[in-house]
Length: 129
Image (cartoon, rainbow, N blue to C red; front, side, top):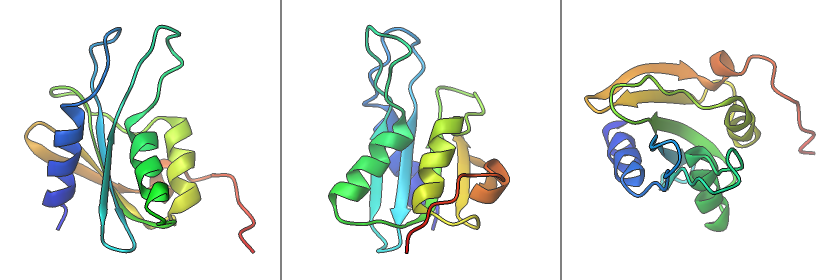
């Protein structure tokens, strides 16, 4: 089931805009509705004021009306082990629970899976009532 997320993240990475770092990242999120939302990183001249791949994917998800993450896949450039940054871990936590799987991929495929709770054990609590 995660293969489709990997392929979506890989395709998104191919569209990244990273002229300064040359480090492209792709992310794909499966919403609780079953749809996949992908995004890439975008750098700009005000480096490091960029836009992470996870942020792009979350934006596509929210624009579609989905508010809940079921699964995530992130892939960096080449053979680098690339986990979500701290800000993206918090963003993901705002739309997903601690048990959401976060797959980390390299070009060869998914190499490790964490839960969101493993990556962000002390996230900010939001009152959603």
